[in-house]
Image (cartoon, rainbow, N blue to C red):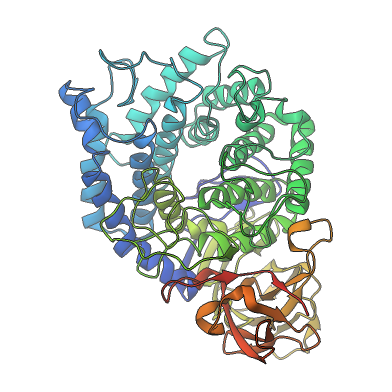
Amino acid sequence: MIMTSTASPVLPSSGRLRPLGIDEVRITDGFWARRQRINGQATLTHIQSRLESEGWLPNFDLAAAGTLPAGRRGREFSDSEVYKLLEAMAWEIGRTDDEELEARFRAIVRRVAAAQEPDGYLNTRFGRPGQGERWSQLQWGHELYCLGHLFQAAVARIRTRPDADDGLRETALRAADLVCREFGARGRDAICGHAEVEVGLAELGRAAGRPEYVAQAALFVQRHGRGLLGDIEWGRGYFQDDVPVRAAEALRGHAVRANYLAASAVDVAVESGDDELLHALRGQWERTVERRTYLTGGQGAHHQDEAFGEDWELPPDRAYSETCAGIGSIMFSWRLLLADGDERRADLIERTLYNVVATSPSPDGRAFFYANTLHRRTPAQAMDPDATSPRASSSLRAPWFDVSCCPPNLARTFASLAGYIATADDDGVQVHQYASCTVRTVLPDGTMVAFETATAYPADGRIRITIVEDGEWTLGLRVPAWAHGAAVRVNTEPAVEAAPGMVTIRRAFGAGDVIELDLPVTPRFTAPDPRVDAVRGCVAVERGPEVMALESTDLGADVAEAVVDTASAPVEAGGHARVRITLRDTGESREIALVPYHSWAQRGPSTMRVWIPTT
């Protein structure tokens, strides 16, 4: 199909589907609108404030003044958090036209650009007297990783404000040109220890019309698996440097690195027409989802190396399930969905959005989970709102971390979320995620498609779509895999069953036509795969796309005492669920409310579990 310019985080030159960007889809109300509003009004300011107070933004001022390394603060990858904030701001400005945010954005860009070396090099940790030499610590130094996030920030700006004169585009292009000179076919035969530059280069190449950047991304992807980074205690698989990308059977090693690399490999496969590579990535996705992904959509079973476990190794109480890994999983799944239209990708995106991404931030958008456990055995400890927490060690949401990759990663995801809701092809529009929103786009044949969606989803399973413009086209609506018994109705016509997958409606729509999709969000028990040893003999409760959690706050006792009676089906309880629980120590049996997992730990310290032993 023909691709047109759009304000989308991902815009491949070809594929089964074209993403509709934040200029074509506007979230107007409901669950995700509230999260976007909090992100724009609170989270972005909170992140910027912490980047200042922690010294990570002032590092660029020191670089521009020529006084580094004295006074530099933060880890070797702290530059990347500034770039992720810029990306989030760019998407938010594109969404809201916020003039005050625009001024803040430009001020940060000026500070970043002032630190760039004449040849394009940009990093506050390496390259100056008293610091390590450029590219001297590719295994752990994150230089290329940081630049990858700079490139993605530039993409957001190019796609939302293509005529902006702030200097971010030029800064990114100079750095990308340097990367191509240094690491091209005639340059260093090397890769970064943390994949990210690949996905940044690929998308910047698309956005700026620079195919050499996509070629460089392909070169980096091809170099993985040759042992270029050397071995470490967790093995080369930690860096995805043990086997070539196209030879891997599943994602393995560090979960964020693995997903970022897989996402970029899809970009490379699509742009180069490499069907063999794309086929391999589909197989890796399927095995990873089946055997190495938690019920929540979380990925990463190991704390020590933030990594995937082996097949079926999914202990709930030791789940790392890093927030950034969930975001990386969405990046990978979305690119595959655009390539092949398989709605299972959208199912996983939905699961991950509601049960990892939505779980991390506090209601006020100023504290975050880094890791997302499925079982909390001891009550958590309240966090000092001014403290900086060691990575993943906080037991409640923390305001900041010494490794704070997750907060700005969440911010850029929320700001660009409308770009993951719908797609188009030559025949019509497909809706993959449900939120109250407006959709307006033009198909390749000139047909105008415009409609409004109203829904309280996921609290309620009814999605109501009202057509705004006359026209003949096909509307596709995703029916999640869990939604057996779903039904769709057009105007006053009889409702018809809608099986899981994509239900399509083709007709000459008239303004005022109404399409209603009813998804059964009734609470249900979910049994684990019997090969997952850690939860054998347990069940979980799901309600629509949300995983439910049992908290000691509602139980009135430690969740270790709880046993669930599966003879009594879970019941609806005003957007929550209730199940019959027996306490081991007293034998008392009563109905207990479960809360959506994304809202756990919002009422003070508690114990919590998702998988509950059965009687």
